[in-house]
Image 1 (spheres, rainbow, N blue to C red):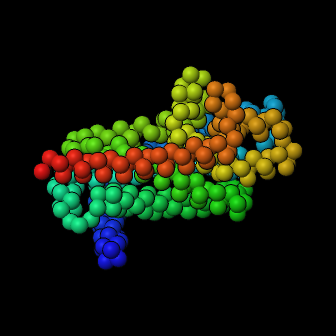
Image 2: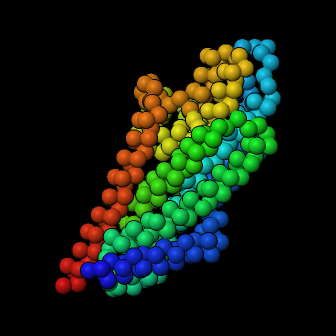
Image 3: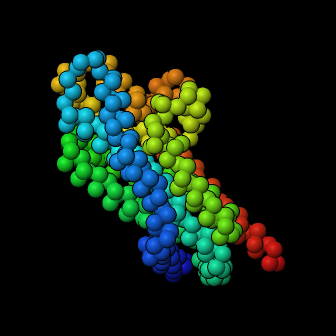
Length: 311
């Protein structure tokens, strides 16, 4: 029994290492995973930065002098939060496509004839994708923090710690979601289609390209059913917490600061009801647990079906 457990652990470790290596070795897949963050950076560099500056400035009474460094810190924090919000899902989606590729190439069949149990193979794919996602997102977070330090740093140590926690939870969620969606795929065409759709579209539905507060009420209510909405709000809350507190400390109107939080989706509403932070964490963590359970179950049931067919 002990020997079997040791074998499972070693085999899982080897498969995780192999999948991580393949992701960073395949330049095409790695670049595809960064399409959405690159699009976001281009949008901010071209016109979104000025749009958000004007939008936040308009929250204050006309003629109110606004500290440029505070405003830069505010927009920079929103950029960082939006970048992390999309990377935490699009990167795991693209990294998880190797699970489909293994089916296409037949490598998955080779794994199936080994003594490894189906749930161990599933767990290996999951944790390899988590590692890939965390590496990319932590690099992005580090670069973003350096950027904020250059244009206007208002984050506390607690804010930074919560940002790291948010990124970990978002990557866990993105990996679990992509595992469930990618597992049934059987062809290269389906794999490419899913990767393209997610890379191009997720930035819209998570509120990265444009805050959800700018959408219609009906669409906001629909997106309120998506766990990713709460993850994005948590990241934005912690990325902008320090600068919003500084606005208040310098005597800017409290109502104006609240409007900034509303516009940036720091204050999230579900059918016009304010969503507390603990509810956002509960929804996100509950979704992670549920999706992981579904993914493992899909693998076990698939293995049992295959065994019955062989008999």
